[in-house]
Length: 367
Image (cartoon, rainbow, N blue to C red; front, top):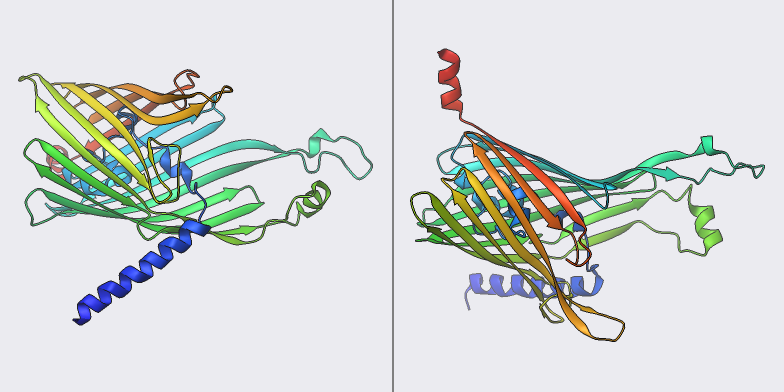
């Protein structure tokens, strides 16, 4: 047996042991704010863009798609609000073309709830209620993505990767720093596009620290366990996608894609599930007019829900949206149902992209 084979087998055994250990100790839902998604175009298609994504938001969906950007630089931004405006989600990103075949991008994501009343000091030492002692704090999660993408010498193959830095903060009570990696690829074959995004490929680790000085008395009085500094692990997730593009005529075009999110953190409430992996499928489609106006739709988040009679029913999340491209400016809108369609908790999401060409900009400045 060659040394290379021995090294490969050793690596696989180490990874298998680590994977089994992580399944037993890792929480099922970790860093879930990174599962919300960015971009009105992608959200309108129910996140079904792993194979077709090709703009600055690809740094989040599939960094390999950054190589599809035609301009030297592209900027992106999004703001959305959830739960009647209580929670706010913000995204800023920028890409820069390093060469004809490589692109670099930086992204920032924030999901937070602000102005939460802190009533720990509401009652003073004399038992009086003092509203002037109420302070406010924020609970916010941040992610910083540093992306690199390139075009392979293999025809049709693109590749990319992310380095992720996570910052989570709950006022002055708790905070965490995290680190992780993503790996991704896209492959074009005629009118088909295939994509793979391996999120948290090495697992993402959040190191939590707690400030219990202000909370210790409250924890003791309420009988709750005082939290201790700990390490939170986010398990890997593999997302596979296949897309098909079709020119209906010289004015209209069609893009349709189906994706599957494969989780390895135990059984989830998805259509396909087991103790080892769960698969969550979702579908999206886009019709464009001269690549200026876009109509998008998608279906995802299929779940089986049990009622009081123990009868199960299938629920799903429908999304729809519009897009408009005016020269270098792209505006996308999505109307998304964040839960069961019967509840209809809809959110209006807008995103903006602006492309910059350094060469054309220099010519304009000279003229």
